[in-house]
Length: 124
Image (cartoon, rainbow, N blue to C red; front, side, top):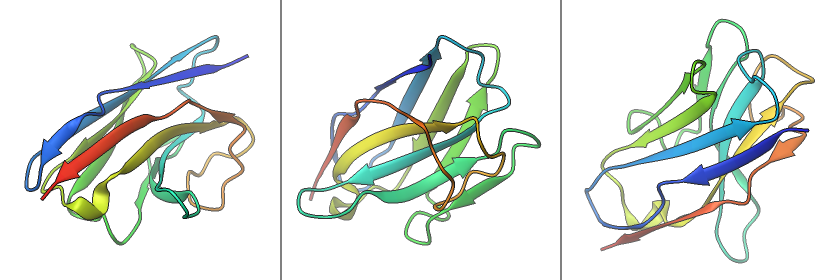
């Protein structure tokens, strides 16, 4: 089994930066498609960013392009989400997800492992 644990979420002022981490255990995830999603109350979970299992191909939601960067450190079995120029619209619970069924990490990828989430709150 794969366990994903997110960390790094906190209260930050608008315009600030934050880096989220997703530490994996149970298996080496270097070949897994990894992604970050986010969710606010009353809304569906939305795709934020993904990084493919092979080649490190990245994909982003339009709303975060140019502001967020997803990366992975295979040696640490960890995926990161670097976020800059945060706004109140980015306030959400951020979830890490992994897929061992598909290589490409996009919004329609079938993710079969999920973390518990970490809260990001951006004050305006």
